[in-house]
Each structure stands twice: as structure tokens, then as C-alpha cells.
Length: 324
Image (cartoon, rainbow, N blue to C red; front, side):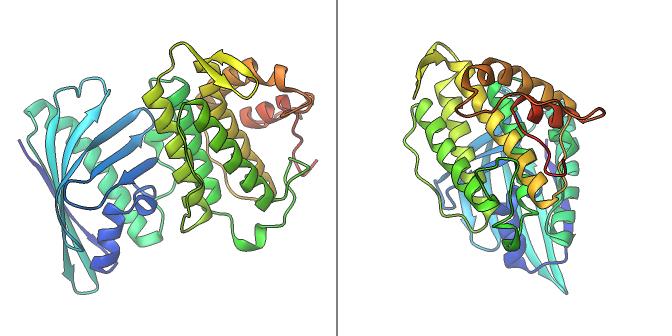
């Protein structure tokens, strides 16, 4: 069976092709993380929503016009036998572009689920083309299957939404982390992510992103992928000695989610997160923060009555809202 749909975008063919192939653009409508080796025979890997990863090979590519992707889900329940191909074609029109997506090789049952998914994401592609960003994806809001890695992907999606609102004039603004301005907190977060990648057994370097969101997202994606490869079994090494792998992997989501709150506090950016994600990350935080007070975290403070779940988690970590 084959799914096919064409959408009209108010952007040039080059911009339309970038939207369907470039990681920084893909993250604005269809992926939390994306890695693409944009050549025939190159590999790609997208976290479409937290916990749902598609990966494969670029089978064919005509730059600016057409790409063919081998399409296979990684550990998605019910999709184990999906091994198909996605063909995306871009054509110029007056005032914009037509993008046609064809998904071949599906069974009738698979076509139903994939049609629902593609209709959802192609609608978001239209919004991203019109507005520059499709905004938070409700499908990524509260993942059904949560573990430390999925929670990290969900927390990254929250942080991405905040960082896209940060502008150059925010650079020197204070943050709830009293030692850091916005710029200094970004540097701190990047250093922390490198350390968390090392705990997963990866040797990572700082990427040179096109934007602040791109730089942080690319490195965070590499860290999360490293933990996916390593897995959550057994013990892992940290700068403070050996610890259970789930505890160390859980620090990724703690850092991403709390710093999303920090940046939103500092800049006034809108932050969108579900209580389900905060609750899971709070469980990880309860295993990490008490032993790190006086080093990475201050003493717990009392949150104001009526505070949301993330502000209460921030208070547990020793943070006070800037407005206070």
C-alpha cells in the first residue's frame, strides 16, 4: 500500500527542500532530534516524537528537488515489520512550492497509522513554512512510554521551544542561576552535556550551530543518542565515581528541563511542558539532587502557593523565580 499527499508551501523550492532535509528545519515541524548525512548512501536518524525513532539510509537524492529515504522504525511498538521507503519531491509553483510525499511499501494496517501521522506532520510543515516554526507538537507533549532516555527527548523538546525565542539582546540578562547570565548559562549547559556524553561512553565535541537552539539541540541529540546506544543497564562512571546508569542518564533530562525554566525566567519566553514530563523528571531529580546540594544545587526553597509543577521542581533544586 502507498500513502501520498501534496501540500503547497509559500516558500521557494530551495527553502522547501531545506525544510524536509536540514536538521535545524526538521526540528521545527517533524522531529525532536535529527541527524542527516545528505548524500546517496548516507544515513539519517530522526526522533519524530520522544521515544519514536526512525532511521535508515538516503537511497537517492537530487539536491533541491527529490530525496528517497529508507524508512524503518527503531523500537516502536507495532512497527517492527515496517521497512518501507519515503519519497519527497519538491516542485516550483507561482509564489511557492509543491511538496509531494509518497510512502511506499506499507501493509493496509500500517497505512492507516502512517496516514494519520503524515497528515499531522504535513499540516505542521505547512505551518512551519508559513510562520517559520510550527510551535509545540501536542504529540510530543506527554510520551506514552517513559524512561530516562525518552524523558530526555521530551525535555529537549521543551528547551528547544524556549531557545527559539531567545534573541541576541538577551545575552547578558541574569538567570535564576545567580552565577550565570544567559550567555554564561548556555556555555555551562554545553559543558555539562559534554560531560554527560562522556558518562555514556561517547567522545563528543561542541558543534558550531547556525543558531543557539541549533548548537544546543545538536549536542543534546548526540548525548541522547549516546545513551540510547549504551543502554540503561548496569553501572556507569561519572566524575564522582560509579553510579547506576539510569541515575546518570536521568541527569540529562534534569539539566535540559531545569535550564529551559531558567532561560524562560530570564527572557520571558513562553514555556510549554506537561505535568507528566515534569513528574517523571522530578523522580530522577529526587535520586540526584539531595547528594549534589552545595555543589550543583542549592538548598531547597519554598515555592509560592499555586506554582506550576515545573516551578515546584525548580524550587526543589534551589531556584527562586526572578520575579520574586
